[in-house]
Length: 282
Image (cartoon, rainbow, N blue to C red; front, side, top):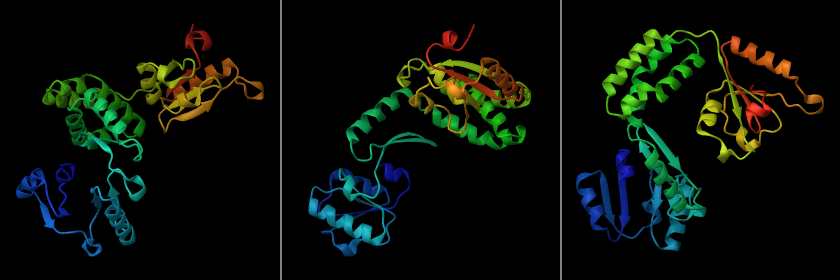
């Protein structure tokens, strides 16, 4: 069904076909070829999937496909496959793929099931609306940081909530209003975020959101590698540790934050533990 949804032309080679497949072939672009597989059956396909319980046949299909330079997936046999079929969370045009690299497909399906329950189907509609307004937003905001900030507000505020509640037309009107009313802000922001004892699983949702929003992250040696991995990939990372010759005095750190904010940057001061104890939050 997923292949048909992608408008794929499918050819099935087997001696027998199940009733469901026969039914699908009557109304879809599926050719059923009733014969034993032979190496000469592999032609100029875009991809091949071998789903038999015959290990020797699966090995033969894999061998011929590899020799022909055609991507092949052998179900439940990652060693014979050149690509993996991930579990899919489909919120088209937003699509999330979950793969265990063939090591634990059941676990991938369980993760998919959990994601299905927490990601509203309306995310697809939200993405479609964003696509309709993408060029307008690009014309309204000259640099990428301003555009990113605008979209972050749209995707996490009133506009998104209107889409989720089925009021897409109201969401579009609100988006048009924001494009007219939004002013270029000269000053940035500072977020004081506590990284806790170092376990990424103990971060709050708000801490994670602010880490993903920041343009610049100031961190020290007490912040674990696992926590730093959750910072936005393109954020500038500035080490301001206080150990030996690498130390930065607090006055210098404060001045750096002020300078960054005055330049319009969103700054995350990431501290190990509680930021109001270790980060001079008072």
